[in-house]
Structure formats: structure tokens, C-alpha cells
Image (cartoon, rainbow, N blue to C red; front, side, top):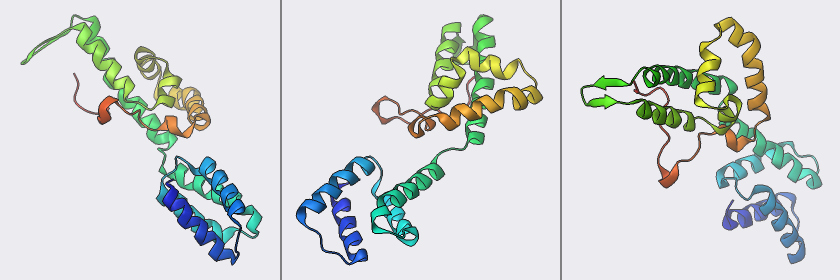
Length: 195
């Protein structure tokens, strides 16, 4: 959250409750809000404030209600466990195909021969494009492929998916997004055309 937006919202809060506060009180609140909302985008903080106003019964509870609304808005922006499961399954299929070519001498294409090392680096790229929570759950590209290829869909649903859902649920929010790549490049599309 930017300083400008914070000052603006502090004025909105004071106006809403019809109170005039001392400079010391405002500084104390500013420090609390900076620590609570420092990395959250302005538009989310502002939207959550107005929603918190509709639910807050006591002025002293505003920060609690405000934080709860921010958590709701942030969690709504995160991919669901279902989305992450689908991404993991798609990545596992691509990695499995690449592992086949990697262990069977590569592949000759119209543009040249792809060696086992080429497929190994492609698998690393596919795996690195997955959110960190999924990477931690799977362990490695080969492990991810093994999880999805060695079990029936019924076994995946009954035995594997509950552990995956727990891992995603317990993961920090920031680890549910695809990792940022160096230089601001967009992560590779998992469903895209390798092999």
C-alpha cells in the first residue's frame, strides 16, 4: 500500500467515525497499518475498508474486520486447489512424454535432433513454471510424473488428492502463484507445445 493511499484512507476513517485525532494517534495508526497492509495493492485495501465499514460494529474492531476482508479478497484471487491440481496433471503429462524421449536417445525433428539433455532442461522449465506449493508437494519433475502416471484416476482421487489439497491449503498465499522469472519474463505455459 502506498503512503498516499494510506493517508487518504485514514482521512476516510476519521470522517466516517466523525472524530478528530491527534498527530500522535495518527502516527501510531499509520505504523500499524503500514505493517499490516504494506505489500497489499491499494485497490484491495480500499475495497476491503468500505466492506469492513458495513460490518464493523465498534471503532476499535475496525482493523480486525478490515484484515478479514483483505484476506477474503486476496484468497478470491488465488487459484483454487482444483486449478492447481489441473496444472500439476498437465505438467506431469508433458514431463512424462519428455522423460520417454530423454531415456530413449532423444528425438529427431525437422529443426534438428533434441538430445536427452534438451528434454531434461525442458522438464526443469515445465516444473519451474508450477507454483512453489505444487513444486514442494511433488518434489521433482520425475516425482511429479511418477505420481500421475503410476496410479489410476480413482487412486489419485482417493489417496493422492487429499494430501495435495492439504499441502495447498497449508501453503503460504504467495507460494500459490507461478514463480516470477528473472527479468520479468512470463512463466512458460504448461499446456504449450513441447515434444
